[in-house]
Image (tube, rainbow, N blue to C red; front, side):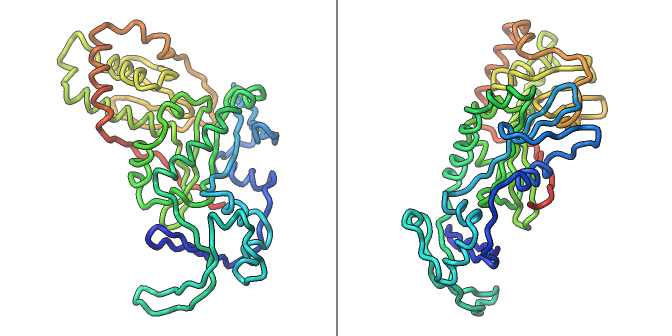
Length: 338
């Protein structure tokens, strides 16, 4: 498939017209993009959720879905020969599809402006970035309503969303994350029943990448609050422990299911499938997607009540500042293309 974006309009020229229907093989390909299960782990194929991984201290369910800009995008991907028929004019556009697409002749030019031909193409408008984020939120909301049912078959459940229409193709992480952070429903994602929500999209060089949405919102808040703490020079105030202020700020911002392990100097914040380790050597992020939790921890929601009024007041101040400050720690990883 060749895709060109010209002034907000996406022109799609399909080189191959044969579609394919969703089945477990397709879902397994998407599953394998994220999870590299060890041989000792058992992956069971179900329906709700699509997969459950056994062999850890807790079973992990995985629900797989796809994100399209509109229903016709899905139809062109799934219905055999519909796209090819539109392009060779042996297939009329279905009446309901005319709202989303049209077929017309276009001229292709190279970088020097020389014509490279005038093929037939399927033309559709690209949604605005706000509309794209709204489409993503609709998918998450829809799956969120079913999450309780998924958990009847597993202890934890992740959601994997394939950006099948390349709505979030990006040049850099910030190009994706900044508008997403501004426009997404932060509360929905932070309070999600899913341990993690992975978005599989692509960079402009067509490299597929997985972006853990919950982890990135968490890390962005950590980075922002740590910056506020450093600027306020809290280490010089004996009555305020920087860690307490950080934890209180994270709690107030919606990250209430954090687990804390370790001691005062070397400790970890566990959030969903990730571990943020603080040590004398600095910070590092560990992927614990398919790792057993073999450590003792305290729950932030249980220790929040111990924080002093001064700590809570400082955290409230930081929370007010946070709304106007963009921060990010890029967490994404390359995956094998579908």
